Length: 314
Ligand code: BDR
Ligand code: CA
Image 1 (cartoon, rainbow, N blue to C red):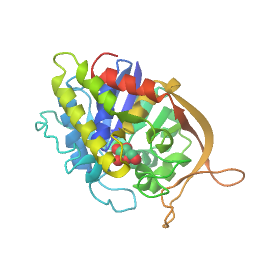
Image 2 (cartoon, rainbow, N blue to C red):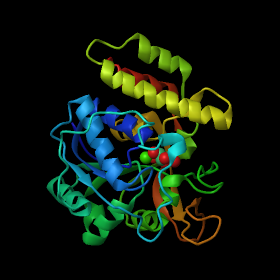
Image 3 (cartoon, helix red, strand yellow):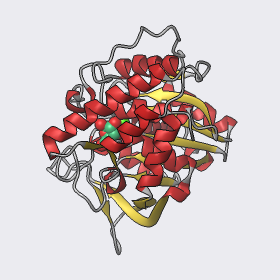
Image 4 (cartoon, rainbow, N blue to C red):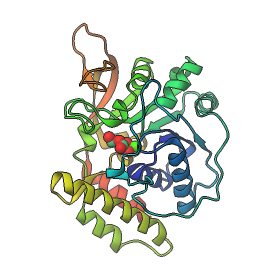
Protein backbone atom coordinates (compact mmCIF):
# COMPACT_ATOMS: atom_id res chain seq x y z
CA UNK A 1 0.00 0.00 0.00
CA UNK A 2 0.99 3.63 -0.52
CA UNK A 3 1.52 5.61 2.71
CA UNK A 4 -0.11 9.03 2.33
CA UNK A 5 -0.22 12.13 4.47
CA UNK A 6 -2.98 14.50 3.38
CA UNK A 7 -3.18 18.22 4.04
CA UNK A 8 -6.59 19.80 3.53
CA UNK A 9 -8.59 23.01 3.97
CA UNK A 10 -11.94 21.21 4.05
CA UNK A 11 -13.92 22.62 1.85
CA UNK A 12 -16.32 20.95 -0.60
CA UNK A 13 -13.73 19.51 -2.97
CA UNK A 14 -11.41 18.67 -0.06
CA UNK A 15 -14.26 16.60 1.39
CA UNK A 16 -14.53 14.75 -1.91
CA UNK A 17 -10.75 14.22 -1.89
CA UNK A 18 -10.98 12.79 1.63
CA UNK A 19 -13.74 10.40 0.57
CA UNK A 20 -11.72 9.37 -2.48
CA UNK A 21 -8.62 8.65 -0.37
CA UNK A 22 -10.57 6.82 2.35
CA UNK A 23 -12.14 4.64 -0.31
CA UNK A 24 -8.87 3.83 -2.08
CA UNK A 25 -7.74 0.36 -1.02
CA UNK A 26 -4.21 1.03 -2.29
CA UNK A 27 -3.76 3.99 0.10
CA UNK A 28 -2.74 3.89 3.73
CA UNK A 29 -3.50 7.31 5.20
CA UNK A 30 -1.04 7.94 8.03
CA UNK A 31 -2.48 11.30 9.00
CA UNK A 32 -4.38 14.38 7.94
CA UNK A 33 -3.22 17.91 8.66
CA UNK A 34 -5.48 20.92 8.21
CA UNK A 35 -4.88 24.56 7.44
CA UNK A 36 -6.60 27.84 6.86
CA UNK A 37 -7.78 28.32 3.28
CA UNK A 38 -11.31 27.74 2.06
CA UNK A 39 -12.33 28.05 5.71
CA UNK A 40 -10.50 28.69 8.99
CA UNK A 41 -8.13 26.01 10.26
CA UNK A 42 -10.55 25.33 13.10
CA UNK A 43 -13.46 24.84 10.71
CA UNK A 44 -11.31 22.72 8.39
CA UNK A 45 -10.42 20.49 11.35
CA UNK A 46 -14.02 20.06 12.48
CA UNK A 47 -15.13 19.41 8.89
CA UNK A 48 -12.40 16.82 8.41
CA UNK A 49 -13.40 14.98 11.57
CA UNK A 50 -17.03 15.04 10.45
CA UNK A 51 -16.17 13.54 7.09
CA UNK A 52 -14.03 10.82 8.69
CA UNK A 53 -16.81 9.97 11.06
CA UNK A 54 -19.41 9.89 8.30
CA UNK A 55 -17.33 7.61 6.09
CA UNK A 56 -16.44 5.46 9.05
CA UNK A 57 -13.33 3.64 7.84
CA UNK A 58 -10.81 6.28 8.92
CA UNK A 59 -11.68 6.59 12.58
CA UNK A 60 -8.16 5.80 13.73
CA UNK A 61 -6.43 8.29 11.40
CA UNK A 62 -4.87 11.19 13.32
CA UNK A 63 -6.27 14.61 12.39
CA UNK A 64 -3.92 17.44 13.28
CA UNK A 65 -4.95 21.08 13.20
CA UNK A 66 -2.36 23.23 11.45
CA UNK A 67 -1.73 26.83 10.44
CA UNK A 68 -4.33 29.40 11.48
CA UNK A 69 -2.92 31.91 9.06
CA UNK A 70 -0.63 32.16 6.05
CA UNK A 71 3.06 32.84 6.75
CA UNK A 72 2.95 36.54 5.93
CA UNK A 73 -0.45 37.43 4.54
CA UNK A 74 -3.92 38.10 5.80
CA UNK A 75 -6.50 35.42 5.30
CA UNK A 76 -9.38 36.89 3.26
CA UNK A 77 -12.07 34.79 5.01
CA UNK A 78 -14.26 31.83 4.07
CA UNK A 79 -14.80 31.25 0.35
CA UNK A 80 -18.55 30.90 0.56
CA UNK A 81 -19.30 30.82 -3.19
CA UNK A 82 -17.89 27.33 -3.69
CA UNK A 83 -17.89 26.07 -0.10
CA UNK A 84 -20.81 27.71 1.73
CA UNK A 85 -20.57 29.33 5.17
CA UNK A 86 -19.50 26.11 6.91
CA UNK A 87 -17.23 24.79 4.14
CA UNK A 88 -19.56 21.87 3.51
CA UNK A 89 -22.01 23.76 1.29
CA UNK A 90 -24.29 24.20 4.29
CA UNK A 91 -24.69 20.46 4.80
CA UNK A 92 -25.16 19.65 8.47
CA UNK A 93 -23.25 16.61 9.66
CA UNK A 94 -23.41 15.57 13.33
CA UNK A 95 -20.85 17.08 15.69
CA UNK A 96 -17.84 14.78 15.49
CA UNK A 97 -17.31 12.31 18.29
CA UNK A 98 -13.76 11.76 17.05
CA UNK A 99 -10.97 13.78 18.62
CA UNK A 100 -8.22 15.71 16.96
CA UNK A 101 -4.59 15.07 17.87
CA UNK A 102 -2.95 17.74 20.00
CA UNK A 103 0.35 17.58 18.11
CA UNK A 104 1.78 20.52 16.21
CA UNK A 105 1.12 19.97 12.49
CA UNK A 106 4.65 20.79 11.30
CA UNK A 107 6.13 18.49 13.96
CA UNK A 108 3.68 15.78 12.94
CA UNK A 109 4.76 16.00 9.29
CA UNK A 110 8.43 15.84 10.31
CA UNK A 111 7.79 12.83 12.53
CA UNK A 112 5.89 10.91 9.85
CA UNK A 113 8.57 11.67 7.26
CA UNK A 114 11.22 10.30 9.64
CA UNK A 115 9.23 7.18 10.39
CA UNK A 116 8.64 6.53 6.67
CA UNK A 117 11.82 8.02 5.21
CA UNK A 118 11.91 7.52 1.45
CA UNK A 119 8.39 6.07 1.35
CA UNK A 120 5.95 8.77 2.32
CA UNK A 121 3.79 10.54 -0.27
CA UNK A 122 2.43 13.94 0.73
CA UNK A 123 -0.75 15.23 -0.89
CA UNK A 124 -1.44 18.90 -0.26
CA UNK A 125 -4.75 20.23 -1.56
CA UNK A 126 -4.74 23.57 0.23
CA UNK A 127 -2.12 26.16 0.96
CA UNK A 128 1.42 24.97 1.58
CA UNK A 129 1.76 26.71 4.95
CA UNK A 130 2.13 23.58 7.10
CA UNK A 131 4.75 22.12 4.79
CA UNK A 132 6.78 25.34 4.69
CA UNK A 133 6.74 25.34 8.49
CA UNK A 134 7.79 21.68 8.58
CA UNK A 135 10.72 22.43 6.25
CA UNK A 136 11.78 25.30 8.51
CA UNK A 137 11.64 22.91 11.45
CA UNK A 138 13.65 20.23 9.66
CA UNK A 139 15.56 21.40 6.58
CA UNK A 140 16.38 17.75 5.76
CA UNK A 141 12.68 16.92 5.36
CA UNK A 142 12.54 17.36 1.55
CA UNK A 143 15.11 14.57 1.11
CA UNK A 144 12.95 12.11 3.03
CA UNK A 145 9.77 12.53 1.01
CA UNK A 146 9.10 10.15 -1.85
CA UNK A 147 6.71 12.48 -3.63
CA UNK A 148 4.74 15.61 -2.95
CA UNK A 149 1.61 16.03 -5.05
CA UNK A 150 -0.14 19.36 -4.78
CA UNK A 151 -3.40 20.74 -6.08
CA UNK A 152 -2.20 24.20 -6.89
CA UNK A 153 -0.94 26.56 -9.52
CA UNK A 154 -1.81 27.43 -13.09
CA UNK A 155 1.05 27.28 -15.53
CA UNK A 156 -0.39 27.76 -19.02
CA UNK A 157 -3.98 28.61 -18.19
CA UNK A 158 -5.54 31.57 -16.37
CA UNK A 159 -5.79 31.59 -12.59
CA UNK A 160 -9.03 31.39 -10.63
CA UNK A 161 -8.54 33.87 -7.80
CA UNK A 162 -6.92 36.42 -10.11
CA UNK A 163 -6.24 36.18 -13.85
CA UNK A 164 -2.70 35.12 -12.91
CA UNK A 165 -2.96 33.01 -9.81
CA UNK A 166 -4.61 29.88 -8.48
CA UNK A 167 -5.99 30.20 -4.97
CA UNK A 168 -3.86 27.66 -3.07
CA UNK A 169 -0.67 29.35 -4.25
CA UNK A 170 -2.05 32.88 -4.06
CA UNK A 171 -3.29 32.29 -0.49
CA UNK A 172 0.24 31.71 0.80
CA UNK A 173 2.78 32.50 -1.91
CA UNK A 174 5.68 32.69 0.56
CA UNK A 175 4.96 29.14 1.71
CA UNK A 176 4.75 27.97 -1.90
CA UNK A 177 8.08 29.65 -2.67
CA UNK A 178 9.74 27.81 0.23
CA UNK A 179 8.30 24.46 -0.83
CA UNK A 180 9.10 24.86 -4.54
CA UNK A 181 12.68 25.90 -3.73
CA UNK A 182 13.22 23.07 -1.25
CA UNK A 183 14.17 20.37 -3.71
CA UNK A 184 11.26 18.16 -2.64
CA UNK A 185 10.12 15.94 -5.55
CA UNK A 186 7.03 17.88 -6.53
CA UNK A 187 4.18 17.06 -8.89
CA UNK A 188 1.91 19.98 -9.62
CA UNK A 189 -1.72 19.15 -10.33
CA UNK A 190 -2.88 22.63 -11.18
CA UNK A 191 -5.69 24.32 -13.05
CA UNK A 192 -3.96 23.18 -16.26
CA UNK A 193 -5.69 19.86 -15.65
CA UNK A 194 -8.23 20.34 -12.85
CA UNK A 195 -10.14 23.23 -14.44
CA UNK A 196 -10.97 21.18 -17.52
CA UNK A 197 -11.75 17.90 -15.75
CA UNK A 198 -15.46 18.44 -15.31
CA UNK A 199 -17.88 16.46 -13.21
CA UNK A 200 -21.12 16.56 -15.20
CA UNK A 201 -24.78 15.73 -14.74
CA UNK A 202 -24.31 12.30 -16.29
CA UNK A 203 -21.84 11.46 -13.52
CA UNK A 204 -24.37 12.53 -10.92
CA UNK A 205 -26.92 10.17 -12.50
CA UNK A 206 -24.37 7.36 -12.28
CA UNK A 207 -23.76 8.10 -8.61
CA UNK A 208 -27.48 7.95 -7.92
CA UNK A 209 -28.17 4.80 -9.85
CA UNK A 210 -25.63 2.37 -8.60
CA UNK A 211 -24.85 2.87 -4.96
CA UNK A 212 -25.15 -0.16 -2.69
CA UNK A 213 -27.16 -0.30 0.52
CA UNK A 214 -25.42 1.14 3.53
CA UNK A 215 -23.76 3.84 1.42
CA UNK A 216 -26.71 6.25 1.50
CA UNK A 217 -25.31 8.74 4.01
CA UNK A 218 -21.98 9.18 2.24
CA UNK A 219 -23.73 9.43 -1.09
CA UNK A 220 -26.26 12.02 0.08
CA UNK A 221 -23.39 14.16 1.36
CA UNK A 222 -21.33 13.78 -1.83
CA UNK A 223 -24.37 14.55 -4.00
CA UNK A 224 -25.05 17.68 -1.99
CA UNK A 225 -21.47 18.93 -2.41
CA UNK A 226 -21.39 18.14 -6.11
CA UNK A 227 -24.78 19.72 -6.78
CA UNK A 228 -23.77 22.85 -4.87
CA UNK A 229 -20.54 23.09 -6.85
CA UNK A 230 -22.35 22.56 -10.16
CA UNK A 231 -24.85 25.29 -9.30
CA UNK A 232 -22.10 27.67 -8.21
CA UNK A 233 -20.22 27.04 -11.41
CA UNK A 234 -23.40 27.38 -13.48
CA UNK A 235 -23.82 30.94 -12.25
CA UNK A 236 -20.35 31.78 -13.45
CA UNK A 237 -19.84 29.69 -16.55
CA UNK A 238 -23.33 28.78 -17.70
CA UNK A 239 -22.83 25.01 -17.81
CA UNK A 240 -24.12 22.32 -15.48
CA UNK A 241 -20.75 20.83 -14.67
CA UNK A 242 -17.97 21.69 -12.26
CA UNK A 243 -14.28 21.08 -11.66
CA UNK A 244 -13.60 19.02 -8.53
CA UNK A 245 -9.90 19.93 -8.23
CA UNK A 246 -8.73 18.18 -5.04
CA UNK A 247 -9.66 14.50 -5.64
CA UNK A 248 -7.73 14.62 -8.90
CA UNK A 249 -4.52 15.30 -6.97
CA UNK A 250 -5.22 12.31 -4.71
CA UNK A 251 -5.97 10.12 -7.73
CA UNK A 252 -2.73 11.10 -9.46
CA UNK A 253 -0.74 10.54 -6.26
CA UNK A 254 -2.10 6.99 -6.14
CA UNK A 255 -1.87 6.38 -9.89
CA UNK A 256 0.60 8.59 -11.75
CA UNK A 257 -0.37 6.89 -15.03
CA UNK A 258 -3.56 9.00 -15.05
CA UNK A 259 -1.52 12.07 -15.99
CA UNK A 260 1.01 13.22 -18.51
CA UNK A 261 3.68 15.39 -16.98
CA UNK A 262 6.37 17.72 -18.17
CA UNK A 263 9.44 18.66 -16.22
CA UNK A 264 9.38 22.43 -16.00
CA UNK A 265 11.30 25.00 -13.98
CA UNK A 266 8.76 27.00 -12.04
CA UNK A 267 9.03 30.21 -10.06
CA UNK A 268 6.47 31.59 -7.64
CA UNK A 269 5.60 35.25 -7.81
CA UNK A 270 5.74 36.75 -4.30
CA UNK A 271 5.79 40.38 -5.39
CA UNK A 272 3.03 42.64 -4.12
CA UNK A 273 1.66 43.25 -7.57
CA UNK A 274 -1.26 42.01 -9.67
CA UNK A 275 0.70 38.86 -10.55
CA UNK A 276 1.09 37.76 -6.92
CA UNK A 277 0.89 33.98 -6.62
CA UNK A 278 1.54 33.25 -10.28
CA UNK A 279 3.34 29.97 -11.06
CA UNK A 280 5.63 30.78 -13.94
CA UNK A 281 7.63 28.69 -16.33
CA UNK A 282 11.26 29.79 -16.37
CA UNK A 283 13.46 29.19 -19.38
CA UNK A 284 17.12 30.00 -19.81
CA UNK A 285 18.98 31.52 -16.92
CA UNK A 286 16.13 32.76 -14.73
CA UNK A 287 15.64 31.25 -11.32
CA UNK A 288 13.16 28.40 -11.26
CA UNK A 289 12.79 25.03 -9.56
CA UNK A 290 12.29 21.80 -11.44
CA UNK A 291 8.87 20.28 -10.86
CA UNK A 292 6.67 17.83 -12.74
CA UNK A 293 3.68 19.70 -14.06
CA UNK A 294 0.61 17.72 -15.08
CA UNK A 295 -0.32 18.90 -18.54
CA UNK A 296 -2.97 16.34 -19.47
CA UNK A 297 -5.07 13.75 -17.67
CA UNK A 298 -7.28 10.87 -18.66
CA UNK A 299 -10.25 12.81 -17.38
CA UNK A 300 -13.04 10.34 -18.07
CA UNK A 301 -11.01 7.47 -16.57
CA UNK A 302 -10.51 9.58 -13.46
CA UNK A 303 -14.19 10.60 -13.25
CA UNK A 304 -15.27 6.96 -13.56
CA UNK A 305 -12.87 6.01 -10.80
CA UNK A 306 -14.19 8.87 -8.67
CA UNK A 307 -17.79 7.71 -9.15
CA UNK A 308 -16.66 4.13 -8.60
CA UNK A 309 -15.04 4.88 -5.28
CA UNK A 310 -17.95 6.95 -4.00
CA UNK A 311 -20.29 4.11 -4.89
CA UNK A 312 -17.88 1.41 -3.68
CA UNK A 313 -17.80 -0.23 -7.10
CA UNK A 314 -14.22 0.42 -8.11
C1 BDR B 1 -8.32 25.00 -4.91
O1 BDR B 1 -8.74 26.08 -4.08
C2 BDR B 1 -9.69 25.64 -3.14
O2 BDR B 1 -10.82 26.46 -3.17
C3 BDR B 1 -10.08 24.25 -3.53
O3 BDR B 1 -10.35 23.45 -2.39
C4 BDR B 1 -8.91 23.74 -4.32
O4 BDR B 1 -7.96 23.14 -3.48
C5 BDR B 1 -8.72 25.28 -6.34
O5 BDR B 1 -8.05 26.42 -6.80
CA1 CA C 1 -8.56 22.59 -1.16
